[in-house]
Image 1: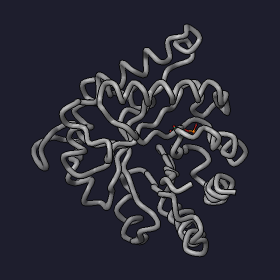
Image 2: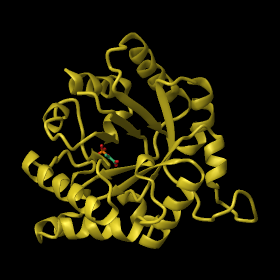
Image 3: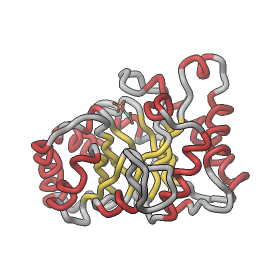
Image 4: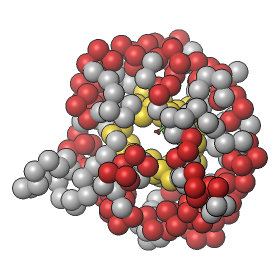
Length: 252
Ligand code: PEP
């Protein structure tokens, strides 16, 4: 297997200046284990930690991302409380998470997500675009309909370069619950998404990852879905021990 596998740590509103130790441990592990060459490790800590962390860990082994950017499409200006894509890029981030279900609840509607994705790509940030259905949508059998709508309303056919876009399928009912979809459910979702992206965007090999309660125990099972090229990991990414074990168990 020689495709790139993504392990993306979404720290959400967690961590402090001491948490650099967790990233350093991951870094040391990667340095000693060159066999894990087909992988991409990305940490998305809260923005207050980003600059100092990326300053300290300047290495091609670990990349950094942010959990948000402003939808205001300029670099600087009179916009209280906003951080522009350019400013975030200057912190050392190369990636940004957009469309996460926890963010959609607060302030990201379809239009905002689309604007942010376009701004991020224009500023040379790679986008981790999250999509996912909630439990009642799943129970009503409309998961794929929901996911397709999220994609069509956010990805502008003329502006998206799929080399710089990672689609993270994160069923909302799986985030932080310990419940992971069955492989047959996931297989159906990813096959359909691949077909849909080919039809609508003419993309042959979209980068698609999975997020939602990924742990050291279930990563080997998730690995069996060949269309999954990695993981967005919340809780289990906060401690280096579990994050490293997830990587190890994947490649075992
Ligand atoms: C997430 O919120 O992106 C996530 C995957 O969280 P968790 O792994 O904690 O379910």
